[in-house]
Image (tube, rainbow, N blue to C red; front, side, top):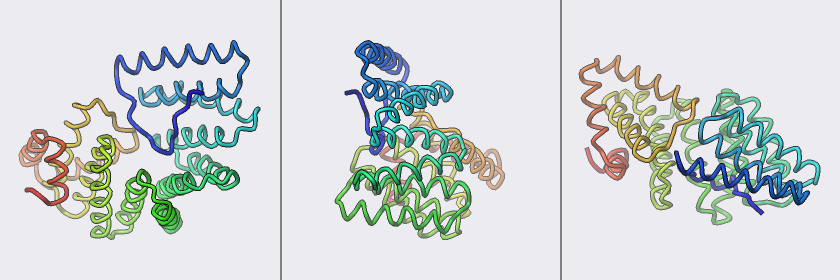
Length: 287
């Protein structure tokens, strides 16, 4: 049946690829409905919903995934319910609605534990940590991803640790421990590089740009910001709204500290970097 695991998110493409994917998935929905297969229809609905999410059509994404969630509930497919609610939680997080995201992630965590889905417990714990961080609940936001990281490493999972390290880095950054945050981001960056996750590498560059501003490194922040921007443009990988707002705040602060001319020079330097060069720069392997 058509499904994609939200435990290991990947980038789906842009432009014509999106349109083709949407067309094929809509045809799949029609076929499952003709067969009266509610479970298949549920998976098929969630997939175009996820594609719509990457296209920025949040209304359509929520509508499709909500419909799929309802069908999963009808057939009591707990794995499907957890997948759908994970999608809805991530969309809520990306839009800055962290309380709604928390509700979704708490249910997915409960469901994963009920069905013995140990590997996804680690992933769902990290999701919960992100939602709690967004609400300023730093103590619990630290506990959740730390538990996630321990579990992921105990299970030998390679895909989860970079995401969890990001969550921990963001929490420690908010708590003012910039040195530890930098070390966590660097570890996440190295692991993501090994996994070939371009979308994740670009996101970490942006996080490290924000961290650089807080650490009083405005020029470094501007250069990393430029590198992330050009990398996203080249790969067609969008940035989610809540992260876009943070990046813009960080870049405004960097510009105020550097002055417009120096900021533009640093930003332009970032634009000339390849992703490999930007990663090396962020890790302190080049200047």
